[in-house]
Image 1 (cartoon, rainbow, N blue to C red):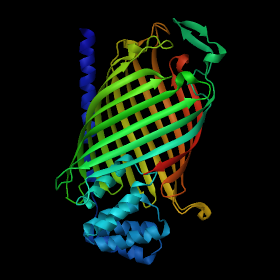
Image 2: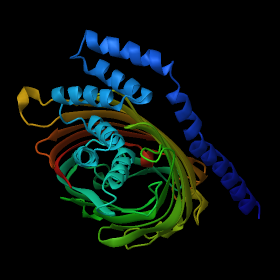
Image 3: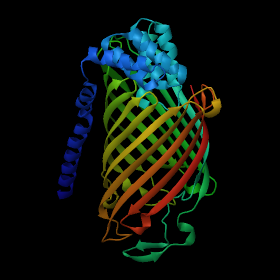
Image 4: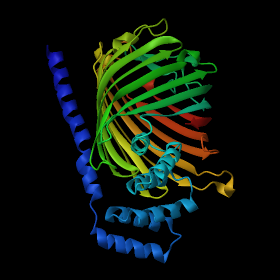
Length: 452
């Protein structure tokens, strides 16, 4: 009884925190939209742009001021000027799609929106918005919209199995010594990732729609076959829009979700649940969003993982993300999350929190190597996980507490309208209260992404 009461208290605290994560989005965006007198800002940014017509940042600032003041054609002219210098900026293409739709040029709007949807560096929320606006532009002609991507690549990891750095570990509360082959080991792997998004435009002036997303991730190792992974996942639900008919800024989407993971070709995890997403835009490519999702996790035992089922139980997570396009070719992004898992065994139950921050820079291809812009993203993240109880098989006196840090550098080298060469570097460091779970890893990957 005491355990159930403590569990209920933890859930109450978690839901209160998650509610804050979601509902903080709208007042934050309202604050972000506050600006000086629109007419004065329009005049100031116009004069600044005319002083240096080739300055993309000044044209970008004027386009925002002109759009806010209702001068849509002036905003269009300024944004078209930016594309003359950097023709593949997806956020500018998206904004032009919105503006052309406002002035009644739906064919031009659809053309720009389709270009934006093919860009490899567009955040999911911005991609969803572009698809929604495209549905408005083409509503009279079609109701079904499909976009997606496929990535295939190779990866090297210095510690592919996330094994401990040292052979010295804890076993039954005393010091033990692992076999040499049980510590971290390097390996090569092949990756295949597929994502598909389907939108059905409902008969509604507000632009309501049904969204369905499908994702598969597959990875095969050269030597570490025991960690080969295959996963399938989907979510589906309606998205309701609120705000101006042509450009609603607030949306709410309840959804159901499910996923299944195979490890070494054997069933490992089945997950089913649902949640709600609240998203607020304060610019064509700038947004904040919050989501809460609850699911039932069922882990399966195998010959090599005889006690995995002890992890089974409910999992609740709240997460928020943001993106801020503060320069024509520069975007800041980040997110926060908190989660709670209750498991059959207390030593497998945990609370966790995570945060990440990053920046993406889009730039013309060096030496004109391709006809499309390239982009580089640098991000850093931290994750803290605290387990409820000590695992008696490892150390009955010490609870596991992990602190993980990740740094990722990724380059998108766009070769054609649909094909992008993706090169990434990653460093991971996991500190733990138990030596069994302390490790670091250096990873590098290269692959080709196809967008459609």
